[in-house]
Length: 373
Image (cartoon, rainbow, N blue to C red; front, side, top):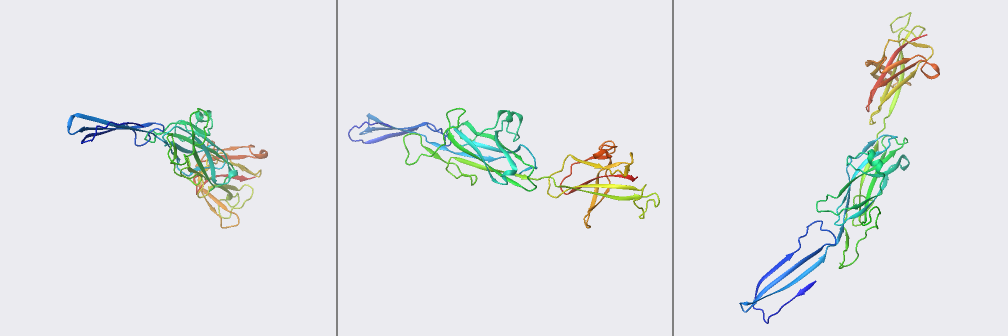
């Protein structure tokens, strides 16, 4: 501080007081900047303009450092995953709201879910901000901190996108929940490529230097307010396909009784096999559904009779053994369904067919006819 004063006996009149200061942003003024304020007082003695004089004074102080970090989940949570899924993604924004450049140390904590059923939790920069793990981000490599994140410019625009990636094991089951917290902790910047020391608050009264105030809030229970770090939680929810299959047979006709309620399973009788594939309520879609059926050696499939796919089916579970009845569907023989003589296990004849994706609470069927040898 510099002070200059002039006195001329008794002061009879103060003519003007003028104050000026260096412009400063209300939010985001950079730590270490000097703010100078000058005052000027002019006066006369005895109302004599020839005695006009002035006195001035100047005050300068240094802007201290405010450290404020924000982590925000941008994925729609929960993110639905399937058992065995690799590189499932949670997307986050990490923002430096401080008035100084910082490094941001990144870490994750699994706060809910069986740790053995989720693996390889890794953090990447989301280089194009699309919330998806791309090859360019894999090539750039996993990260453990954000380097030299610029100070807030007053708009909160210093935001970097990151993604947390994990593999779900095949032991995970429908309904499993995995909560992952991403934490960003402010560290000293200054050396590119190296994580600086953790930033602490200045204790005690204000000093003449650059003091540090930790102004962050608390996002989750994994960190507390005013500690230089912040976090948010993302969630994976396992929605596996819960597929069951029921295979039943019914007599269509026999060579003696023909098509009648009295038809019996005798040689020459026509039998219809019904295969009903059901995906349970609340499950994820079952995709790439493929049916493979080795025919018993004592029956023969009649080529050209049809292999019907994507039919409907009812399953009667009232008895000791569930019984399926098929209807509808499309004849896919030769396209989406095939008969291969000797193509099955141990040289048995093989019926194979593909069904459309099966949503939750849905049954699709494949059915065909054979003749007893």
